[in-house]
Amino acid sequence: MKVRCNSVKISDSNLHTLGKNAAAKNHFNITIGKEYVVFGLIFGFDDWGCGCFAQILSDYDHLIQVPIILFDIVDNRISNYWDLRKSVDGNITLWPSSFYLEYYHDDLFEEVPDIVADFKKVKQSIITEFE
Image (tube, rainbow, N blue to C red; front, side, top):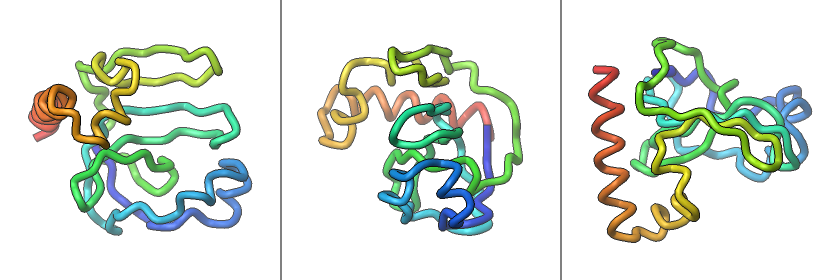
């Protein structure tokens, strides 16, 4: 899946839809008009926001979660590497299987070597799908 950024800021009306905590992160280091490969999707139904969120690489090459409302879909194919799961809080995720490892995203942020190596493989596999 590929998306093109159409806005870098969540509008007030969308903030209402997404939920009160969506405003906590309203700067994403993304660029209007730029296309991004989507590494995962989250359909959230909790205090952190209701709606669909995409996991992409920011302009600084960090894996981030952003509201899909900031994008237009330019390639609607679903990655062959995604697994669908439902969390205990009712959220639905479409992620590569390794993303489901406990603390995966925290460990990636903290640059744990095994997780970084895994993410590099996952990243290359998914990017190759959409070239």
